Length: 310
Image (tube, rainbow, N blue to C red; front, side, top):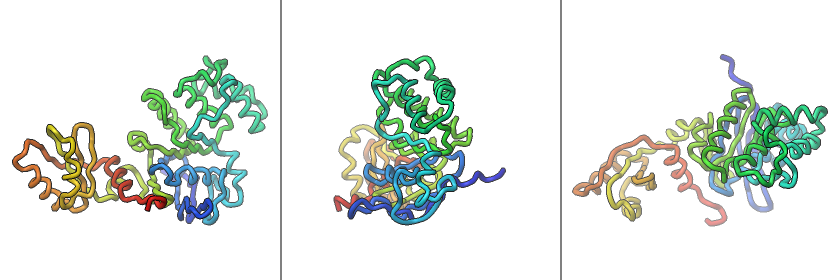
């Protein structure tokens, strides 16, 4: 089977806003049809990175291509082939769904607007709501309308900036089913998210922290790359035990997981000895478990230093 071509291929991309270095030497490769996830804390540079890749911002330095076009000198041409969905609903509340789509079609100078709008309404199951005012839609339907506007001009690349924030679980699930359908049709998707279940739906991931790329690969590769040994502690009265656990030799990370605690560290032997000794003679149960993507994510966040707080 042939390897899909690279849609994004950039190296050493940098962006400053004044004296703040927002994106630092970003290097990234994304192939056609891939769903590529961006993870990282708020203010980590995810949105700025996405905007540079889609032509809305020009990098200060670096090199590379998006859709075969130079990211430094051909940003206008890139924008015409990209669909960008922002975090905040940015369409017109006092226009209907169909009117919003028609307005976007006019902005792109599309020749057969009526046909394109009707087809997009059908593709996103919006035909029955075409005359509903956008301002009266629920969060899930607003999200679907925003995606429809992104797809109207048949882009080859979708850039989605935390697209499911604030929508209910069913709407999130339906949205991701649509994203995988688009991926199967050959559309490449970059998506930033804070939801671990969504991150695990991506083909590959990148973790960005305060402008720097710290980890990338499949979810399994990102987890394995942290080289964590994880133990689960269960039992009654776990509240308040976190601080004591963090002081144990070998414990690099302690996090609550439902009714249990996960304790992780790089030195597996030391951590096991510490936990077995600490729980001996108690009613607590300790058992090794595979580290999760959330364990890896929290560990990476813990090791990240906000430059404005340091």
